[in-house]
Image 1 (spheres, rainbow, N blue to C red):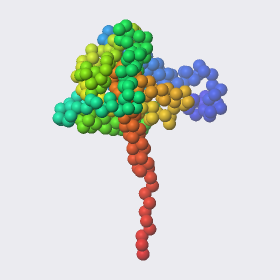
Image 2 (image 1 turned 135 degrees about the vertical axis):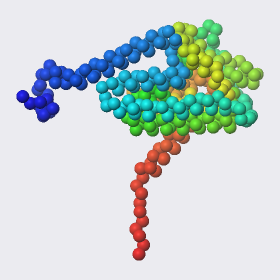
Image 3 (image 1 turned 180 degrees about the vertical axis):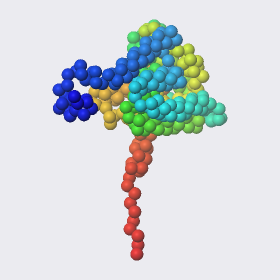
Image 4 (image 1 turned 90 degrees about the vertical axis):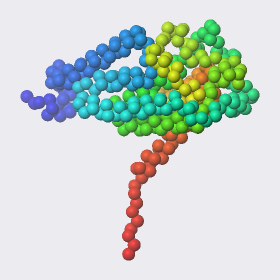
Length: 328
C-alpha cells in the first residue's frame, strides 16, 4: 500500500475521507488543540470584559492580541513564537515611549494655541464652527440620543483597530506587518513632534475657557445606552493624557493610515468599509467636541504623507543600481 505522501494529486483525490483523516491524524490533532485554545481564549476574553470592562488601554490590547496570536501559532513551527516576541516587543516599547513623551509634550514651554483652528473652521464653513453647530442641532447629551452609540463606538475603535490590523498582518504576511508598523510609528512620531511645537486646545477645552460657544465632550456618551464599560486602567490612562495634544488628530490620522495601507490588498466590499472608516471617525470627532475639522484634515494629510514617503523610500531601495562602464 502506498504511503499518502507518495500519492499523486489524482490518486490522493480518490482516497476516502476516512483514510485521509487517519493518515493526517497528527495534523488534525494540532488543529484541534489550536482551535480549542482559541475557543478558551474567546471565553476568557468575554469573561474578563464582563468583569473588568473592555480593555482599551494600549498595553492591555497588545497583550490580548499577543495571546490570540500565540494560540493561533500552536502546532506550527516553534520559531513563530520566538518571532512573535522579537517582532512585537520593540513595537510595544516604542509605543510606551510615545505615550510618555506625548504626555510631556506641553512641558517645553511652547505657547498653547486656541483660536487658530477656530478661525480656520469658521472661514471654511461660513462663519460657524462645525462643532458648535453640530452640538446645537444634533448632539444632546441630556438625554443621550441613539446616534451617540455609533459615535462612541467609532471613537473607541481608535484604541484597538490599528493593533488588530497589525496582528492580522503578522499572522498572514510578516513583511506587510513590518511595513505597517514602520508607517504607524512614523505617523505617531510626526504627531508627537507637532504636539511639542504646536500644542493646541481641542474644542471642548476651548469652550470651557470661553474661546468657543457651548461644546460638551460627549465621545463616551453612548456607553450608557448599551451598558458598555471599559477597563479602569484605560480610564485612568485617559485622565493622564495630555489634553492639548489636539493638532493633528491622531484618531483621524490612524484611521486614514489603516484605510490607505490596506487599500491595495482589499476587495471591493472592504474598500467601501475602508473609505467610510476615516469619514465616520472624522464626523464623530467633530460632533463630540474632540477635534476641529482642521485637526482632522491635517491628520489625514499626515497619514497620506507618511504612506507616500515610505512608498518613495521602498522604490529607491528596490531600484537597480546602474554601474557606469569604466573609461579607457
